[in-house]
Structures are given as C-alpha cells and as structure tokens.
Image (cartoon, rainbow, N blue to C red; front, top):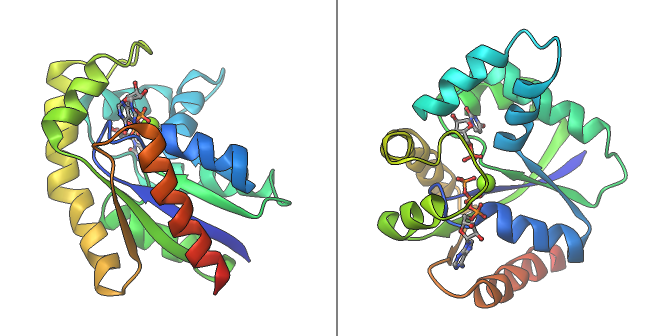
Length: 191
Ligand SMILES: Nc1ncnc2c1ncn2[C@@H]1O[C@H](COP(=O)(O)OP(=O)(O)OP(=O)(O)O)[C@@H](O)[C@H]1O
Ligand SMILES: O=c1ccn([C@@H]2O[C@H](COP(=O)(O)O)[C@@H](O)[C@H]2O)c(=O)[nH]1
Ligand SMILES: [Mg+2]
C-alpha cells in the first residue's frame, strides 16, 4: 500500500513550494501531476504532447488515464518512499473516479492538505513566478482559476465531508505555512 497525501489549492497557492520542503525533511516523495504532464509533453515520441499542451494553455484537465498512469509509474519507481505527496490531483470528477478505479486497492489516502489563499494573491504569484510556464499569463490564469472554482474546489468539499481535509492558510510567509504543515503531518503520522 502506498501512503498518499493529496495537496490541493488554487494555482499559485504554494503547493510545489511546500511539497519540496516536505520531501526534503519528511521522506515523502513529491509528485506534481502538472510537472509529470509537462515532462510527458516534452518526451520525445510521446503521443500526448499536443493534447497535454492544449489542456495546459486552456487551463482544462487532461483525461485521467494519462495523468493517473504517470502518477502510478512514478510511485512504482519510488517504492521505498514513506509516502507520496500528490500535488495538484485529483482536480475533477473524472480524475477522482479514474484514480479510484486504477489505484483504489493500492493506496492508503492519509489526508488532503488544502492550501487556501485568495485568488488575487495567487494570480500575482503566478505572474511573477518567472519559470516561463506557458500558462502563467493573464488569459490562461483566468481559465485555470475558473476550472479550480468549478471543478477542483467541489472535490475538496467531497473530501471535507469525509473529515479528510487539513486546511492551512498559505497567504503568509513560507516559513509560517511550512510550520503549520509539519504539524499536520506530525498529527497524521502519530495515529
Ligand atoms: N507563502 C508564500 N508567500 C509568497 N510567495 C510564495 C509563497 N508560496 C509560494 N510562493 C511563490 O509563489 C509562486 C507559486 O508557488 P508554487 O509554484 O509553489 O505554487 P503552486 O500552488 O504549485 O502553483 P501551480 O498550481 O500553478 O503549480 C512561486 O514563485 C513561489 O515562490
Ligand atoms: O492532474 C492534473 C494536473 C495538472 N493538469 C494540467 O496541468 C496544468 C498545470 O498544473 P499545475 O498543477 O498548475 O502545475 C493544469 O492547469 C492542467 O491543465 C491536469 O490536467 N491534471
Ligand atoms: Mg505547482
């Protein structure tokens, strides 16, 4: 069984930043679904490159079969990890049902870390991220936020109903956010 923590929140809420620190200090392996899709987009011979880029630019969600296979392959390649931080997934109903179908019997879902942050702050962070992402522009960000509000937030609400969401306010200095996140992990791993 793989231990899994889903890390969700609006675009630019700091998921990648916090996951990198958790990976460094707590032995979880960080799997950003977005990073895996970007790597697949760049992979020579990939049949999905154009499809992935279309979704990324449009802020829409790639079919789950593609994303879930990338995530499972990355888990298989890191079997010795304490657990996995699945960053930016599941993002919609299709993601959730596809994940349950493919991974249902293979994972222990520990909790959902929800980094909450006002959208205007998040957009400003993305516009100043400086990583050259093709979706860090005003037009794509508008669509990404819309997708988050309409499709991803309801997934967080579903997990909330099952008592699985741990919310941390990420509109604060990174060190403060990280401190609270560590407490969430400590509490979960004491059980
Ligand atoms: N608490 C914070 N305060 C200020 N800036 C932050 C904070 N957390 C992250 N950032 C910065 O905001 C930008 C976005 O952070 P990050 O890439 O971690 O977000 P993300 O949630 O992974 O975004 P996306 O969903 O678009 O991948 C980065 O430039 C990062 O350095
Ligand atoms: O599960 C996923 C994760 C991501 N996408 C697509 O990638 C971009 C960028 O994702 P980030 O998490 O911001 O790196 C996202 O807008 C989607 O288009 C996806 O389809 N499924
Ligand atoms: Mg990210």
